[in-house]
Image (cartoon, rainbow, N blue to C red; front, side, top):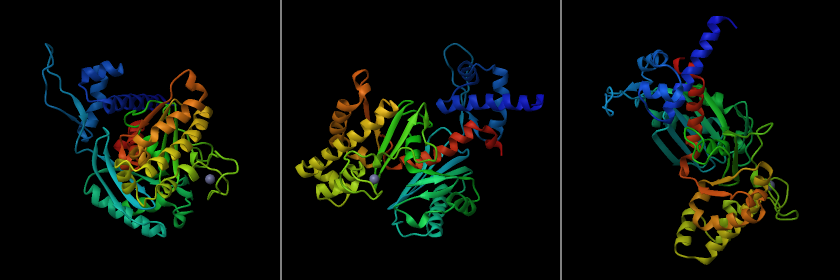
Length: 379
Ligand SMILES: [Zn+2]
């Protein structure tokens, strides 16, 4: 490496450090210097081009104590943003996210995507993104799909068969003239609890129920993907060796006992809304259906926690909506089955992110990359 290359690498490393500190919270140059260990002169050099290009803004001076007035730096509210889009079986969702993690716009539209072709799906997603983002400068787009993806291509998506083999990232990128990154929805929902702010610690499992069950395993602050992207298939962990046949070809999978369709059927309800109303009015059949699902889910989660030694479970999506009726059964199974439970209580949380977790995670993929690879901000 030449000296020039070396200096460039040091500068990018310092820039990354400053941006990460600003993601944490705004701060004056003096405050940022104290938090990053960089000198005020270095900070001035690093922040100058960020201010000039409208990525950062300097707020009016505020008097802090006896010292000189400080002018906090923060990400510019009109600066570049990332967009995240979720393709689901029954809806499309889009969210735009600033570099500071603030949501700017979000929209969710019901849409039956089951029989849709690649170009039908991508045309609708591109149109929705254009509507939501308007003329804002975009850093890139993240795209979420309920399936396994590899290198921007959909490998497996049982509920959206028209998309298997589709180069979705490239197709959307061409429509929007943007860099697009494709990932699995469960991984992205987990990422939304990790970036830009840790909502559940460094190690956790995030689990949701839709047509199937999606789980994202986070270890040491990173989503664990496995060798080929198939990690986290909690829905197909077997809890009854000779149990109910599953769409995957196996039997007794967690999904056959704790999937949303099973809960609704057992509760005698057609929609999540109607199930929620039944629970609120004290319907015993609905409560039993959710409790039974919680027990099955707890058994599956205990297996996962024993394998990975993760301390925390986050119930997301529809599970978060059912949390008050679900968590006691899940917790009780985990307490009885997680070996580390004797040493350390397992934590069960309801996700605060609601139905936009996946789209937010998809946008977060882009803002995280921009902060980690700051050269992208000036591209
Ligand atoms: Zn299965």
